[in-house]
Length: 97
Image 1 (cartoon, rainbow, N blue to C red):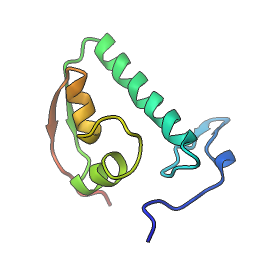
Image 2: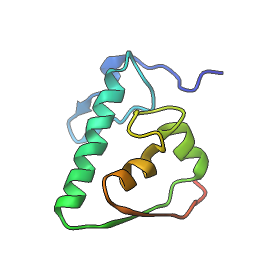
Image 3: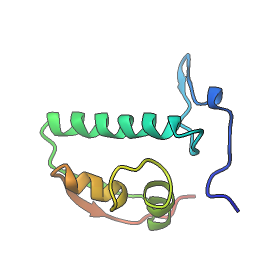
Image 4: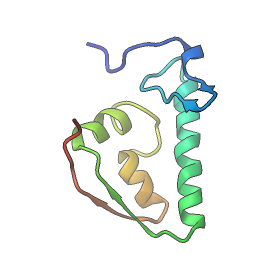
């Protein structure tokens, strides 16, 4: 089974009043867009003087979307990227229904 289901690249777009955030890779384009989105968000968090983050994502989600798949932010995935940028990180794995 593939890690991600495929959708057309044109589906990964912003429409009036709604942002569609894809969970897949289409030729690497979406991944680079998603990487820039995460990087920009962290820039804003640091710019607002936040120094810590509490992640509520399940370990499986973090692994699937930010370590084995998803944007190549950091070898330690999303939380590793946050730490690399200087943020203190706590993780409370919550079940995603």
